[in-house]
Image (cartoon, rainbow, N blue to C red; front, side, top):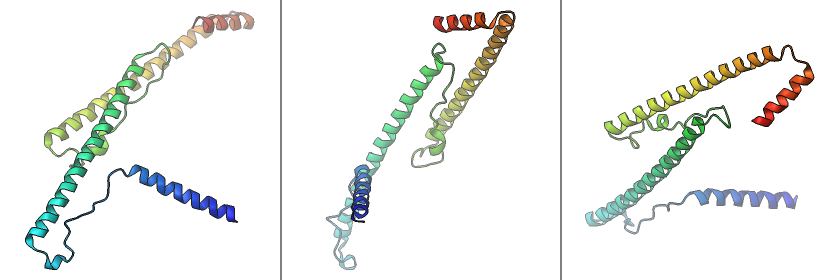
Length: 175
């Protein structure tokens, strides 16, 4: 019974530690907040507002940095996927690009101006076109593979099973 309590306590402690590890930005603590707001002077309230403005400005900068890091990671992944999809020698499958524009398309804090919104729409259309081209390429490769398999079956129809097995082994060795 005591072991369960100890394990439960450790799990709760680890969970709270893990949650705190991801909250890098400190909570708002004001040094200018009036003790009695109903008796505060205009100067005290202005100082408090300036402190809140500075905190919000710093958070907005941190958010912009996080969006930039996210964008960089997505662009890096998409570039790697494009290079992966260009190659047909080692694999024939295709991967879609990372889809991120739809989630932020209508978020005015991310795309506040019409220019940025239009850019997001164009990016989304380009990614849709790229992904549809990938699907077309996959379909072409599947059709080609089926045609090659049909040709091979026709060619191997007259051969003995042992000869077919030896031919398959040679083909695998050559690849």
